[in-house]
Image 1 (cartoon, rainbow, N blue to C red):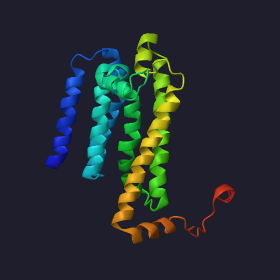
Image 2: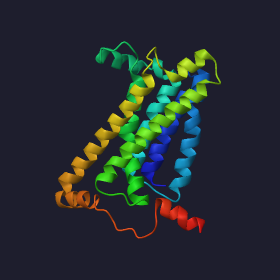
Image 3: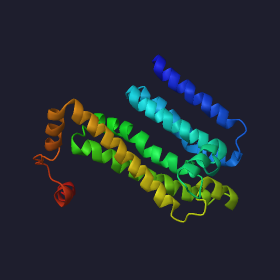
Image 4: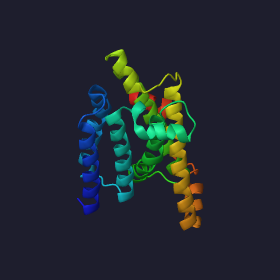
Length: 227
């Protein structure tokens, strides 16, 4: 492990330990951290066989730190969210909205890096599929939240969901994640276009080229398997 990755790990660990010490709502903190308990080991295990760039690890670390801060206070009571509430002239604590937007903004690039290396995604699809996957994961998280609150008290459920009286909270959270991902991919595309305009447009055009595929698909594949 490089010194920079150790720095990222120590930074996240320091914030997580702080957040674990005297959280505002201990049960809510535990609910918020279930995914953290799963996600962090997965990053370590996959990191032994599939190393991401420092850029990706940095973005992941920043997002996890934002989430960890939210788990300490509960998303609807983070002090900085009140500052955002004032700046944006809103009637609710905006930290929850910030983190959902950050999920798209910060996680789209690592997703793109994985797709390019694993599935050889290129051109237009290398910018579209990260947005698509962020949208899917955001929707999956909202479903997990819904299923989770079915088995806890109403008070804990409301704290965990952080709806703050907004019946469209889940839809708005997903929209913000998608918006963040779109912005991230726009920034990446502008950088790539600026640095290598010729290669950028070459890959873009090639990504729409339909490759000849002689193997049977669909009903033809099923018929072949049933023979």
